[in-house]
Amino acid sequence: MATGKKYYWLKLDRNFFKRHDIQVIESMTNGKDYILFYLKLLVESIDHEGHLRFSDTIPYDEKMLSVVTNTNIDIVRSAIKIFTELGLMDLFDDKTIYLTETQKMLGESSSTHRVQAFRERQKALQIETQGNVNETLHETEIEIEIDKEIEKEKSPNGDTKKRFAKPSVEEVNAYCQERKNKVDPQMFVDFYEAKGWMIGKNKMINWKAAVRTWENERQGNGSNGKPKKPDITLDWFDEYKKELEREESK
Image 1 (spheres, rainbow, N blue to C red):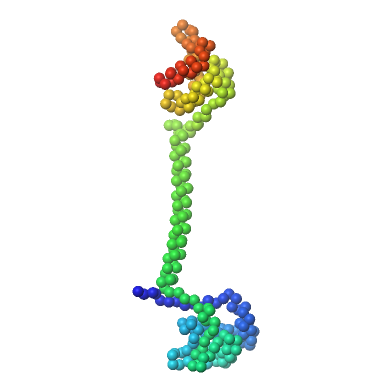
Image 2 (tube, rainbow, N blue to C red):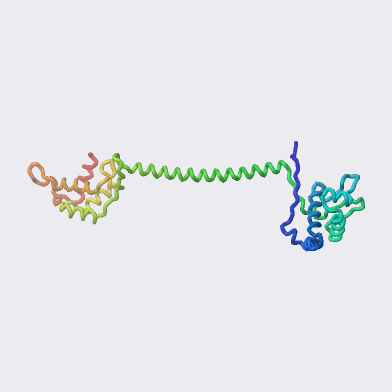
């Protein structure tokens, strides 16, 4: 199974040019040329983990290094001496040149790893994008649900209904006094509180309309002009019982 082509690179530390040995070299006459030559040697040695030879049988000499690095031969000759003295380069008995820093700076990857890294980046981007889409969809769903609730609260003519709020005894009392009727506010509230503010099987919509219904039943005249159900003849229990029976029969 193919493992993919390998790729190498040189990991140059951000403080490379602040190193004392590099600063010493750079401060010399032709110092910048020496540094450039050194970097070219490092790059050239990547594939051989720091070792430099023209071939297995032929080592590099100063003239050959001058050609392959496009560096003046005098610079090459002086630089090799300086690099050797500072421990940046070793010269073996077989004339192999060894760059001592290459091993520490060497990075390795393969085409398979590069493809995998690319796919991981794409996957992360896709997850982030999908997260944004899901968040947008969630917000849209909430807005739709709110719109549905508003529609439920609208009457057929398009007006928004006001939610029913059960009245207090004080509110009923004030309304009864305004109408000057004989409805007992406490009895009215207790009666519908016991029924869960239902009229038959329907939820009460307008409590003032219910007060007016009680008012008509207590103050309305029969055929003889007398009150149908004078409040003073019934105690609260009988009144509650009769009202309950009347509501259940509807």
